[in-house]
Amino acid sequence: MTGADGARLAHVAITVPDLDEAIAWYREALGLRPLPQRVESSVRERPRLRPILDEVYDEACEAFRVAFLVDGDSVAVELFEFDGGEGWERPRSWDYARAGLSHLGFLVADVDAAAGRILAAGGRRRTRTMSAGGEGDWRFCFCEDPYGTVLELQSHSQEEMYGGH
Figure 1 (cartoon, rainbow, N blue to C red):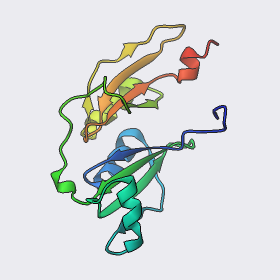
Figure 2 (figure 1 turned 30 degrees about the vertical axis):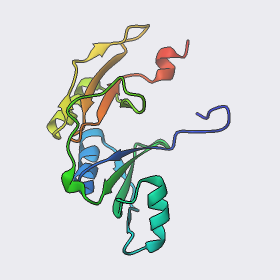
Figure 3 (figure 1 turned 180 degrees about the vertical axis):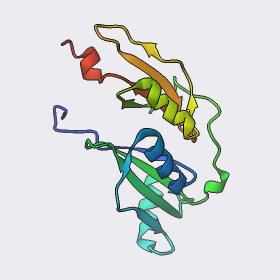
Figure 4 (figure 1 turned 45 degrees about the vertical axis):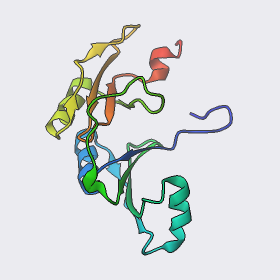
């Protein structure tokens, strides 16, 4: 589906402390498929990156690794591992009222089964499975990946739930 100006959501990026571990986790827990090409780069290997990294991130960013995972649609999850990841710390709580990205929602066939896979893969369940009401059995729950990213699992799309059909 495209917006009024043709814009479509292409990807959502998540910073992780260990790229390979995160790829395995998202594949196991949510069934996302890693794309074969990864990006690995550093200022030392490619000095022309310095002005780009300074503008996008800051002068402390020296190197990064990136992988893309897809679910069969056109939206990808982009996983970033930046140099200096050893100082990474899992967020202590969900700052849900802070402006910016709140959580990622995943459409799943079975909310409880998907939550079980997240738990089995080392994630955390934040809520029980609840019903959103409406005309169908719209079910959802909130979980977290091992890195503190809040994930909503939902049985129906927003268009199905709120599209007025």
